Length: 349
Image 1 (cartoon, rainbow, N blue to C red):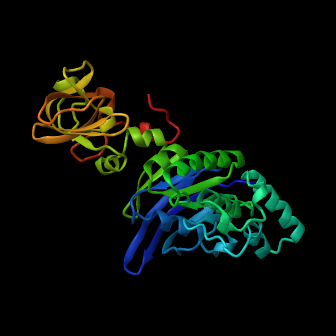
Image 2 (image 1 turned 180 degrees about the vertical axis):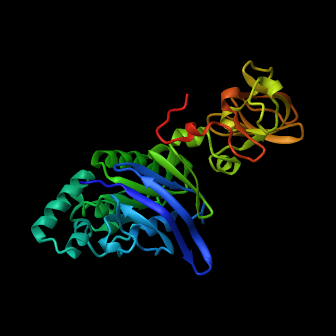
């Protein structure tokens, strides 16, 4: 299966008077797995549909291997799309669903059978060909929807939240299966998701979108450790923001505040070396499975942290945050970690 690169150059999409995508430029390397991540309404699905040819461009260009596809209809583009709803034909068997795209392309019956058998084997569903899709589980239907896209040997695979209809346990298993399959085939893949954990665990590169624009393009580790600004940090699970100064523990002197995740902060009885330590009062403590989620108040502000034991409301404690878990932000709300740490492929130290 061949693979190609994709380039977007100032892509703009409008619907009526509304700008849905605003001057999007992006390079997707050959054989990579890219996740379009962001909240509902940020434009990520529209961007995927624009690549597939279902959302016409107001301006800009897009190219596969440096050849423009902006004027091509969907069926002429070198892409295959898996929709959130799977869109399987309920009156057809599994094999018939897989063969349908080939039939539309005029592929002869014998060749269709060979390609379908190969895909079923690839998906570990070799014995399911004659079954009705209505008899399959959600995870099996997801595999068939993926197989129907792969059967045409597309250089670029587009995935529109393909795992969102599955329960949590199945979704986690299929993340790994899908990522392994993508690596095995070497197919250039672009996936839309609103799930931060899903994007972090699957992508080579994450494109964080906001209000029809790209907020940040980064490797998963870089996006997690150095979100571009406070809004990006909040979306990436940074729940706490605290004002401090360099004299408190030797952190960046030009930071207006620091963000940290509750999983990084702990509740202690005494200050810890190498930590930001703040006196606090326990407001609430809730069991969270492997620990307790504790809400505390310090200097009139609320913060959340983890504790290995339950905490009594009103107790005097120390909020402790490791220095390397603090993310510095300037007065303009932008992250102060150097931009080279937010470059795809760079490993954080």
